[in-house]
Image (cartoon, rainbow, N blue to C red; front, side):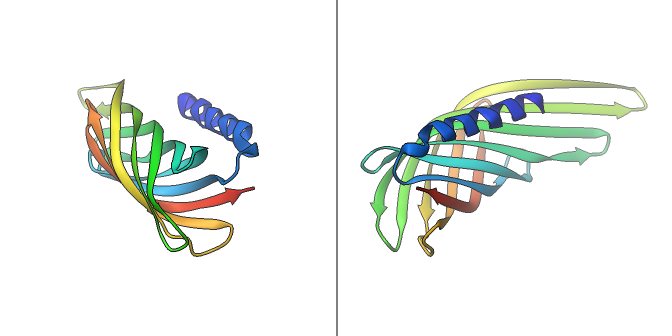
Length: 165
């Protein structure tokens, strides 16, 4: 949890530095991971660096999952780059790629004893997303990505980005 809070603080600091950029966006999302088979919440940002190209850091926290005597927690930190293939007034379609860090923790307590363990894995993100421009100051979106590496999983997300001018 300490690492999650530090990472979230780092993302907020990055967002503060980029506030001077045009079309800067920050938002929240709901996510579902196929490996953990759980939903979660996340924060995301878009920082434009070139025409049609944005840096998109995000963080996701999956709600703890309990199966019998075993409790499983997981969070991820992503540093993506999004390239907009289509970006007009009716639709914004982009491809994404970047780095992923996934941290998982397992804790158990049963008749035979108790214990815990954790592991962190680095992987690559590949995916796509779509923005639905329906309002002036906010932007609903949906994303799908696959994390390649030891923590392989498909992540599906949807949320809202807010324009910061």
